[in-house]
Amino acid sequence: MSAPEPKTLGTRPVAPGRPAWRGQAPVVAVVALGGALGALARYALTLAWPTPPGGFPWATFWTNVSGCAVMGVFMVLITDVWAAHRLLRPFFGTGVLGGFTTFSTYAVDTRKLLDGGRPGLALAYLAATLCAALAAVWLASAAARRLLTGRRR
Image 1 (cartoon, rainbow, N blue to C red):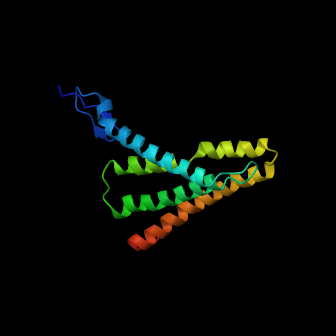
Image 2: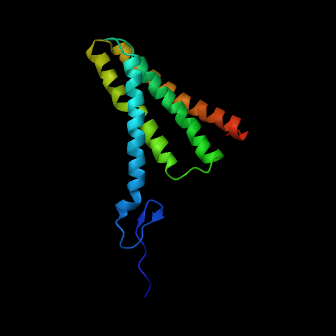
C-alpha cells in the first residue's frame, strides 16, 4: 500500500494535515494589497480628471488603455526577461493592475451616456475602449519583447 497523494492547490502540493488555505494566504494578501493600491491610483485619476455630465469618460478610457499597455510590458518582463518571485505576478498583475483597470466603471460610464441620451457617444466609447485596450496590450508587449529580448514574435 502506498502513501496517499498530497492535496494540491494550484501547482504546489499542500502538506498533509495542513489546511489548503494556508498555502494561498500570502497570494490572497498580496492581491488584496495590490488591488487597494491600484484602486487608489484609479480613484486619484478620476478626481484629477472628472467627467462632465454627458461627456466622454477620458479618465476611465485612459486608465484602461494604459493599464493594458503596462500589463503587456509586465508579462514580457516576467516571462521573457526576469525570473520573478512567485508573489510578483499576483501582486502587480492581478492586484495593482486589476484594481487600476476597471470594467465596472466602463460599464457604468456607458450606461450613464445611454441614460443621458448619448447613444452614439456610448457606442463610440464602448468600441474605442475595446480597440484601444487590445491595441495597447499587443503593441506594448511586442515593443517590450523586441527592445528587451531582441526577439520578434
